[in-house]
Amino acid sequence: MEIPLIGISPNIEKIRKQIERVANTSLNVLICGETGVGKEVAVMQLYFKSNRCNKAFVKVNCAAMPDTLLESEMFGYERGAFTGAERRTRGKFEQAHGGLLFLDEIGDMSLPLQSKLLHALQDGRFTRLGSEKEVSTDTWVITATNRDLKADVAAGKFREDLYYRLSTITLHIEALRNRKEDIPLLIEYYSKIYATKREGKHSNPLSSTTIEKLMHQNWPGNVRELQNVLQRLIILGDSEAAITNLIAPANTLGTSQKSPISESIPPNCVDYFWLKSGGLLDGDFSLRAIRKKASDIVERRLISQVLTKTGWNRSKATKILGISYKSLLSKIQELGLQPPFEL
Image (cartoon, rainbow, N blue to C red):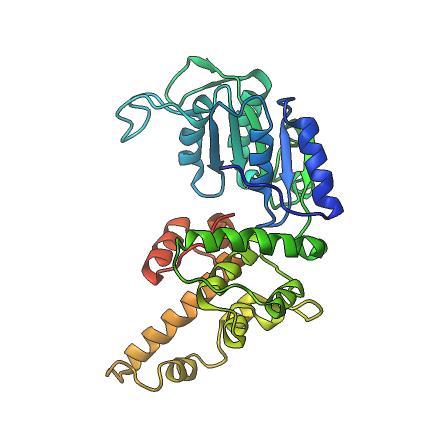
């Protein structure tokens, strides 16, 4: 489904004009901006306005999987290429032949894989894992990142030649806090969508007071955070209590923002747990049980805050938390953490 690029700010108007000019060129496009600003919406606009709109649209999140898996996912593999490879499998490049391949979070791709991607972009040819035969493809590649790739190039973390190959055209979407005039239109558009999805069930229209309060938020999570808040306000109602719970005080424009990591650890874990549980420790008063439950609370809040801060970029989160990718996935499942609604 095509989602419009909502807004009347100079930045959004400029993006719209750039999309109109670029859509039918098949030039590589790099879309930059903070997590949640709507980079994928811009990609979809490019796709639907291009002459490839009736062909495949394939997305790969470069931060969502380890390098070995990402390589096989992108370029495919032959039978027997590795344990579990029981048949030849086409990669995303082949699946997107004639259409568009969207590589999200391109800044998280490893240097060795960047080299193979550069070769595919230059020649339109690549080899599947376990094969020596080259495969040709006509694929329009669009990438997106929330990183400063120029800084990564200077630091040796991203290939300079690949950067210039990807950024033939660069679109930069500004943070929502820098285009406040877009907020009322976003509220109107997404409120209607979420109310419609209720399918006749009772939904609560937002009051003008609530809309005014939403207008004055800083929205560090950008449009994605606004979407989440709108969904819950429509279901729960926009009472003072609901608004207070859904919008953190530090999210208000003009207030200082504390580090989410420092906020995630209570000053006294046992006291915090006792207060939150009303002093009822499930009938188990042993020090070991208290320590375990207090530890779970701290872990859940810390991991949740780091994932939110990184836009659920698990690779970045593992670096901040100092744990392996596998350990993080295990913790997410164990603690019942869920990613937010995707933009």
